[in-house]
Length: 286
Ligand code: AMP
Ligand code: MN
Ligand code: MN
Ligand code: MN
Image (cartoon, rainbow, N blue to C red; front, side, top):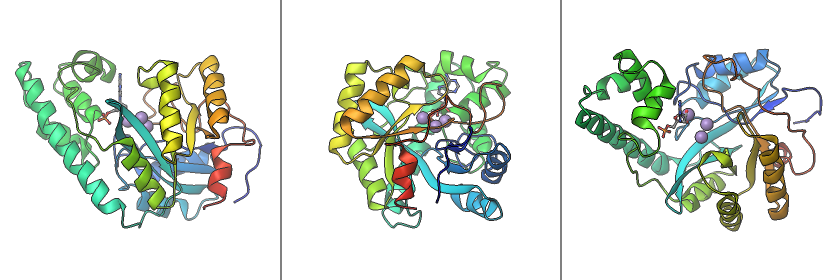
């Protein structure tokens, strides 16, 4: 793989498809990324590898280089954290039990979310949420869509503000795997692990530094420093935190759909590919 430093967007190491809570199929994600000039794309659905085969088939006649990806939900010090796995062997046997456990946790959580919302005098939305997920990994955004289709809220934002976001009824506690286990499964499958969107967990920078210390000690590889919504000062601080710990830096759009004009594949604040970039780490393994 050769990496050029030409104009953006050249890479996007974080995006979603219908295999989890995205609205485009894996093939559509690949085609759209390719059309937008993305040369290195990682499809990183939440807690599933289910979209990768279709994405790979769609990439087969494109110049775009598809990188295997996943976004694992895990726990660090009681905080729910997202860790990206990139460039692993999707056939690695360590994934099967790990992902079966996440499937079970997410299904059981969905049942509990439905019950909690019923206690708020809402209808039972489990069937509708599962129907919207359509076989993809079930998540809170599917409940947001079910709330919209039942006419209870108008937007996903409103659904999160009223029912699904932090400390709301649908924000049920889950015994996700610990961050050590997430790093371990990615490493065992030959991939690199990256802390996703570190400023989106409601953590102070002191806590983010501790998280990065622990992550590095566990064998973690990188930190996402450029993503939609991050402010330039925070990106600079995250770059400092990365270089102090010899973590690679990464960037991605966290694309889910074309429903708002701020979100597009390949769109995130420019992060030049120079020393210490995650793409260089991937270059060594893919
Ligand atoms: P889950 O993985 O089921 O816990 O759901 C988390 C997902 O919900 C994130 O990956 C986002 O796609 C989405 N999400 C989180 N907060 C919001 C919000 N305020 N509005 C819309 N979507 C959100
Ligand atoms: Mn999501
Ligand atoms: Mn995330
Ligand atoms: Mn994501």
